[in-house]
Structures are given as C-alpha cells and as structure tokens.
Image 1 (tube, rainbow, N blue to C red):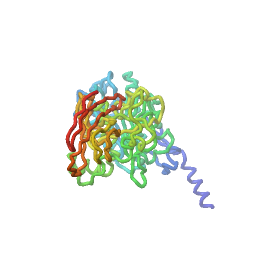
Image 2 (image 1 turned 90 degrees about the vertical axis):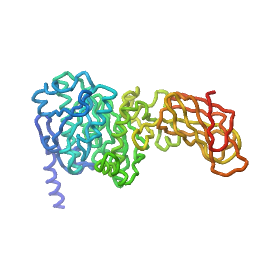
Image 3 (image 1 turned 30 degrees about the vertical axis):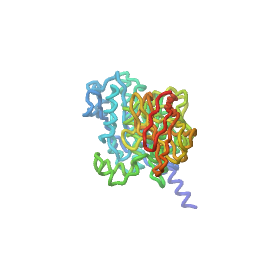
Length: 470
Ligand SMILES: [Ca+2]
Ligand SMILES: [Ca+2]
C-alpha cells in the first residue's frame, strides 16, 4: 500500500513536463499527448534539430531535381523562396511520408510528377527521416515537430507573400497523415485540404481529435483506408476509424488485391529489393499512396459508392451512383459537390491489383433466349472510348426468357456504349449442338445512364453474338 502511494506521488511530480523551442512553441506530455490508454508512455518529441525536417520543392519547371529549402534559411530571409521556382499564383501541395520512410523515396516525387501533367503546382516533399527511423512510439511523438514545421512554413508563406492557407493541400501517408493533421490544427483549420493516406492506427485510433487527424484540421479532409485490419494480430497499420469528411474504403479497406504475392515475386519487381521488402511487410499500407498517384491520371477511374458496408457493395446493392453523383477517391475527391455536407461519409469501390489501379463499374442485365442448358454467360462492352474484356454475368441453368444481372469493374472506360458481345459455354459435349442467345442486354453505367441492346439470334457454344442498340 505504501509503495503504491509513493509511486503515485512520484508519478504526480512527472505530470506536466514540457519542452519549448524557438518559433515552434511548447510541447507537453500532458494527456492526451501521453499518459492515455493508447499512448501510455510519457515521452516528448525530439528537438527540431534531431527530427531535422527538410522541404524538397519540385515544380513544373524543375520536375526531376528538387530545390532544397532549409527552413532555417527561409526564416532568416523569406526571399529565398522568392528566388526559387515557387510561384505564389499556384496551389501548394505538401507530401509527408510515414514511419521509417524518407522524403527522397520515389513515391513522393512520382506524385509530384503526375501532378505536373495535370496542373501547375508547387509540390513540396517533406523529409523527416531522422525522426521517423526510431522506435514507433517516439516517431509518433516526433510528428508533432513535423506538423509544427509545416505549419510554420505555411505561416511564413502567408505573412511574407500573402499566400492563402486555403491554397495549401497537405497529403500525408501513415504517421504523415497525423503530422498533416497537426499542421492543420496549428493553422486553425484554415488549410484548404488534407488527404490522409492510410493514417496510422497505433497511438492514434480512438484518441481525442487534438492529437490525431480529424475533419476540423482543414476545410476539407479526405481519407483512403487500405490497411484497416486490427494492428493486433493482423499487423494492419492503418486506422479503421473514420477521420475525414470523406472516408474511402477501397476493396473493403483491409486486404488489397495484388498484395498476396510471396516475397520472392516482390523482390524481382522492377523497383528492386528495398521496394520488394517494403511491399512484403506493408503492401496494403503502401497501396494508399499508389492509388492516389494513379487517381491523378484517371479523373473518373476511382468512383466511390455510398453503401452500408463493403459486403452490401459486393452484393451489388449500391449501384449506380445517387443523383448527387459519386465522389472520386484520391486527387479529385475535392470536386464532389457534397464533400463537406457532413463528416465521416463512407464510400466503397474496387480497384485493380496493379497499376493502373483505376476501374469503371458497370451493371449488366441479360435476358436469355434459345435452348435450356447449363452453362456460363459472358459479355464484353464496346464503346466510343474503348472495349472491355469478357465478364461473367451468370452461371447455372440458362433458361430462355430468364433475366440475370451482375456488376463488374472494368479496367477500361468504354465511354458511350455502341454494342455488346455475348458468349456462352459449358464444356459439355452435347450432340444436339444447343444454341443460346440474348434477346436483350441492358448496360448501366455508374452515372445511371442506361444502354439497351437486342438480338433475335442464337449461337452455339463459344461463338460470339453481337447485339446492337434497340
Ligand atoms: Ca486533429
Ligand atoms: Ca489497422
């Protein structure tokens, strides 16, 4: 009893420890920063010199080689940014990496390069590898320094160049998402947008909004969840909790297609051994920034559907998009008219298993004709933008006049439908050579537009039947 009493006295004297730094202010280990269930260890962030945050500026004028901006130089003389390729009439997008990662990693600059193909922008990759390559608990505190440095950068832009924080977009992966949230909190939510790419779960899930990314950190917050399984025992690094205005759960948010490959096949990938090992330990977690990167080049290839759950979505019950449309996951999420109508709006979609991850979902309804046999029915779509592969619509008894529907995610955007091809098979030898057809096929696009096709013909197994508009 005496021991417990003494301990509580000792602990009491520790409460309220804080460290203060010029320009960044003070950081305490008070609750909820530390000493709560999700972060029991009373630790403080490192000093800014040890986190050593750097800003690598890429622009349309220097897409391949960054201009290093030492923050200390910027503060002493804001004209250093004026002498760079930074343009005050452009948006500024910061990209912040996560745990163990670094600002020189290719994926950050690749996002910038994709951006330069669609817009003129100041693209700043934030490096804090000195603070990220340590124990996870320490790194999760060091993001407070990173967030403060980014916030300070935004404030210098505002005071020295009258640059509006609403033209700032901060993209953060993993722990970087919460660094973005901290930067946003320190600028009073005036930053235009924050994108959380699979925000880190440990030390953040279920914590107060103060310490983690939440919708109040920016005018608009969008989130992509790709590793939402629990950290214990599944090692799912990402949050399952919704923390934005729009929260996207591609492929259900837990297991990403293409992530089941074994380590050997990963290592022989062109990106080399490090990328292979990264993908092996954290494939689902890293998918979030790959989806974002592809979304820049595919403005309508990541439509997210509002739905009660992913199971309901895969049961084909959330198609097409509602009248207000579907938001796009990734870069163009800010084009959604209802983006800030509420917080924690949830959306589901499927992606591909490798880049290009974009997909376009279609609903196809087939009315059969001809003989009654068992078999599989497949169709392919032909449109003014491209032609799809064959997708299975139904298997079972092919009963004339029966109607069957299915939805699928095409890797091709076919645009406006022009014709449809039908094929059936059963691999059963049948000397009567049965013929099956489709009297009508209805194709619905995700925007609700419907295309109808008809045919009077029937065909033998494995023979294409073309249906024309009707
Ligand atoms: Ca917050
Ligand atoms: Ca998780």
